[in-house]
Image 1: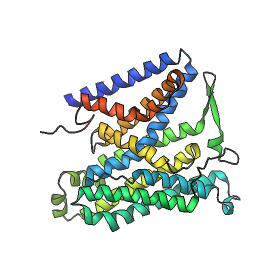
Image 2: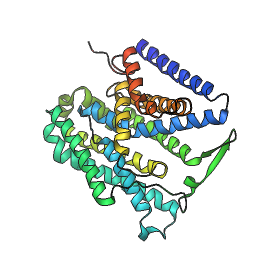
Image 3: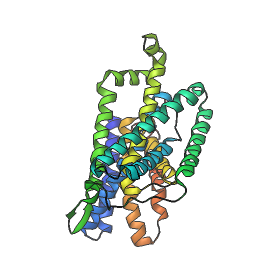
Image 4: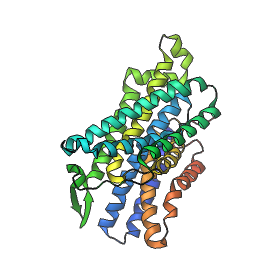
Length: 332
């Protein structure tokens, strides 16, 4: 309990510092300040959708899935392609988009199932092989997407798009897209739902018990391998879902997998390896930091490189204060 209290104080201190820094660098412009904070929350939720699967998979299976970013990218491509498929243009866009998201999530789950059952299961006792394998799978995904859709990046046009993507609202004289709020709301709902799954359901109890002692769970007659498969499939499906809902804002391109994988790994490590709470809080913290630094470096330093290395800089700072991560268990 004392450690949790001190950790929360560190999180609040860092969050307050970022908010104050953003406010002062906005020169009192509340519209600019609000835009930065909204961008930070938006980024944080996208990081969470990649990092949540990483954290859950690592927490139960001790597998650091380097293909997680590729699932995010695949979800974006499938959603973009299905939404803009000529054969579906006669369908209402407000139905076409959720259908495309559902299909992309289902494909992500299926590919995750095939990866765990067909390739990873024989390598549970070989962690180095797992890293190499998932890294290779990420490369294969990228080449497959390149073969199907080419190398050109796709941008989602607001013309003929669905309603929430076209709508906006105004605060402090600045125009904000409603879709950003939608993504933030979806991320918050998923944080709660996954948390309830892990803490309040029988499945969650089995998952947490499997983390502590998989042999004991197996002795109780529970198929731990099936639980492993379910968790891995869920993690990949969440990543594909993240890419799907990010597509209307980010489009689809071959670099987006790595662009979100590295910050997601930083989130998982700084949050505490295997800690779901740490992943959720770390995602928001990293997203806010990236948005604040991006605005400052662009306007005052005329550079953009600082925002890309912000997750790693924040990771270093957190590990100096808490070597095991924000909510990680101290080694003894």
